[in-house]
Length: 156
Image (cartoon, rainbow, N blue to C red):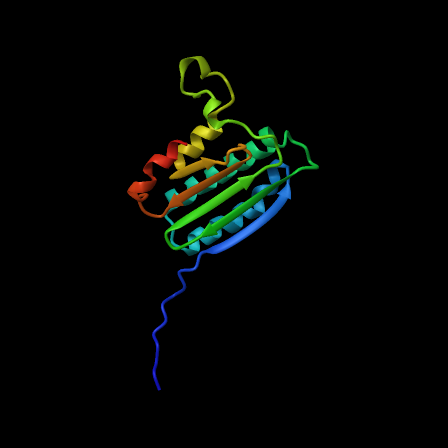
């Protein structure tokens, strides 16, 4: 008889949920995702970054994408692996060009309320990319420093 040693599964844990376009609707999904990050030994700093990134992306989808329309929905997909978490947030809005959003750090924009969510997402997540339409954001947070090939994707 031959015995095999099995390694723990490296298969990412994936989840997809569609929720009402309401700011509070992300709470349960956020709790579930953060719990999975803790289970996979992500650092407190990474858990904070993912929490912030998810909340900002979701609020942008609800407020700017779906225009607070409770008849619309937001889809959240996430995958948690041993070394990274991937999140996609999609709204039913018309989309936008993320490169047209003014930098809130510039003097002329300091007192404007827009653009801060994008700045936070780009600052705390390792990869932030938008689909061509601009109604879906894909984000990645690595447990360790991001691979060299991914460092340029952060600014997109």
